Image (cartoon, rainbow, N blue to C red):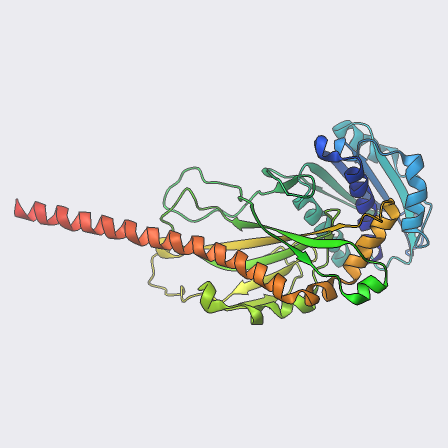
Length: 403
């Protein structure tokens, strides 16, 4: 969708400028406003977009210097547009302080403003907020008299240090509560695990179009809900979701062709896991999916016995796997050149992953193996616990009868 593409470009530019200013020394916090609006009586073929930002995450941006780069990035797909309602910006600045970034543009023939289109924009910003959890996000629609607002902010965050880029601030809030007999506090956050970082070869087609340098991918995984406070609850991995992020930490579409073939390549006997199936990545009200992610479901064991006690049912856990693309080229220094490289990465991502199929598959297999290893150790400890309790109970019963 054109709007999503232009929003991605704007966010990429802000993020890359942050990296150039070595933003790691600053707090990656602040706020982002995305306002999508139409004028009264305007054509259905014109849509206005306002992107505003406040806080340290966009500190030091010079809008006058930025204008030339924005024109190169966005034109010829967008045009100047009227100023938005001042009350919208005032409400934003009252909450988050003065604006460090403001951009207004208009698009022609953006397509129908359907609920599906709005859901796509919402899902994209939610995914962006997942790995930029220090940024509060406001999304507002004012489309031909109909208004709606969505606010995204992390309740619980975790700072994750990576080797070659500023630390990540992840949204690790988990709303799913594990079932248990105890009515007490439970851990409402996930615990990120930094996995393998490995190089990726750049295929010839991408190099022919100007993509050079060193390319790698860093894996970070998150298992939820957390059940560490209840070591004796049975657990089961039922779902895995994979999200891909560009070097500027902006979500990109995960290549469906590569990931649809992934389940066939996994060694399930080595994993000790039921067969996985790639299902639709589209969001639904009952099973929300982050924008452009790929979801795999795991064949479940037979837990549908109606006579089984609820306390014996396993907690269904989900594994979120984040793939962070990392690229460096000493001959690419201009912002627009870096953005061109990111566009080439996204354009050739399917070929890049396919060209490195063995390395990517092995890395994902290792992540699953480590997850299953922890679940197996937990299951073993649980069996030992119940065996000890049973033995103690038997001894106590025999002593009681002896009296």
